[in-house]
Image 1 (cartoon, rainbow, N blue to C red):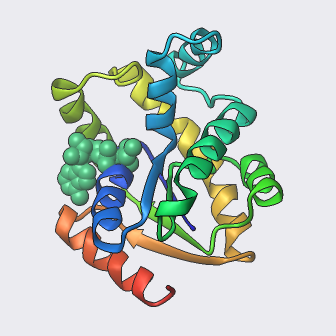
Image 2: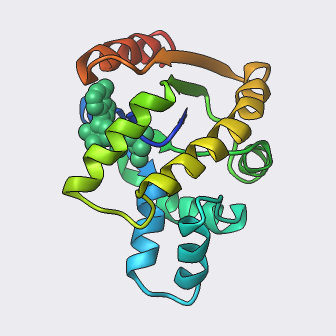
Amino acid sequence: MTSFLGGPGSGKGTQCGKLAEKYGFTHLSTDELLQNELSSESGRSKLIRDIMERGELVPSGIILELLKEAMVANLSNTKGFLIDGYPREVKQGEEFGRRIGDPHLVICMDCSADTMTNRLLQRSRSSPQADDNTTTIAKRLETYYRASIPVVAYYETKTQLHKINAEGTPEEVFLQLCTAIDSIF
Ligand code: ADP
Ligand code: MG
């Protein structure tokens, strides 16, 4: 089980997809689980949409529930899980550790705010999401920086943490990730 920390647009989804294909891992993106939940128009989808439009974090209980359901559904046919975009704050990490277990490896995708903003604006042209206008992107980056520093510190003492330079091309970033994963699993 590997957790991917990194701001919006740092390339978590892109890299998890490539790693899932190479190693037979299952890619679980909290963003995607939330988008699915939104398109289901369930009772809690309105609540989730309001929170996401403000660029804030969805309550941890909802995310953990969605993640757990997805893990259980894939348990019998996977070589491991890549948990993309979670935990976003220390409280989520503690809850995940208690309910499911700590990740064996934590990857931190280091990327500048400029690069992340440019990538997200580019992506929004081809596949618009609820939370990709300029104002929301700035708010999401701010939320990410504020919450992620304590999460990195939390895992530094608990498990193996690898920081990856995520500014390069997808191929360059992928090579660094394969090296980190091969050194552990
Ligand atoms: P995240 O899941 O961290 O939000 P994504 O993987 O969805 O990020 O990437 C956001 C956008 O940036 C996508 O349009 C993707 O194609 C692009 N992208 C991802 N990694 C890179 C990279 N290394 N170089 C250039 N563009 C990238
Ligand atoms: Mg993503």
